[in-house]
Image (cartoon, rainbow, N blue to C red; front, side, top):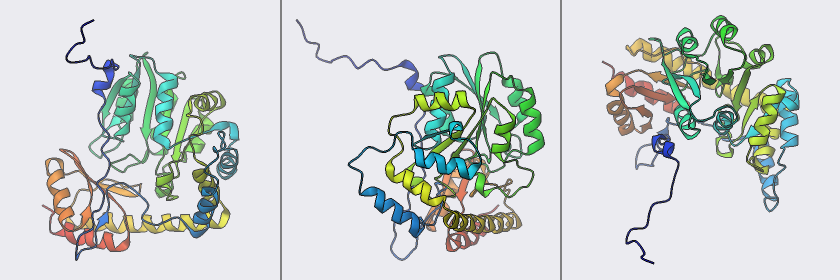
Length: 364
């Protein structure tokens, strides 16, 4: 037998060549004589509460054992806090993983997934991996979802429609009337995913609570996360709120033992009455800082769309990379989307104040 000089490459699925790589926010690298701030990943700038850290330490002592695969205690705490039944919940290692599971349980090769663009960059990755067809609907001039255009994009091959509210990276959230009109026209066999990773930061009274939307529509799934408002990004806990058949199928598709015991304990501790109140006070502080930043930037002459998350968007087009480098030179690490814009996370007051100061010298 002749052994070829160059062995053949393993056979990978052809669609994987189309999968874009996820680009994470750059870390803040320490620099002598300058405090550096990371504003690139939409992280909560504050550490977990002492009570949560105590729960994490206690759970860490048992990591020689598998976690509860059903996350029974965590699910019960979430169900109680959100006013839903445990059977309506499915948990996974972040809401991104739940989105992937939703594609896995709904899409065969060639089926379509409709989403706005630009939106969360994990959407095209998830769709490509599932071998579905991405249908990207451009945002409006105000960086908002164009729901009439998204409705027109639905075909008999559409299996999922993904709505990001507030939209990452541009900031606006869907309002009650437009969402109600949209959902009334979506076919009942099309699953609509309302991605609410930043729901706790919303201060527009016209933006509905996704849980109310879920209760009114049997084809709606709500995605939420404990990464942002609860400051547990490093522990990866996402939750889907869905009607029983969908929630149960998501649980079947879950990676066994996916949510660690440490993560489960941290979520339960964060949902205790006193802890959650303190965490929501932090959220209120971040929202107040966001208002100062957006108003200050607009006063300087920047075009800033409505911001309803813990971040805001500068739609600067071809200046995106140039501006990111300019902010970086001043110790402010932001997230550039080449040719499109710059996303900036609301951070500590000192970082926010420096950002406004630096921005004043860059506007044109």
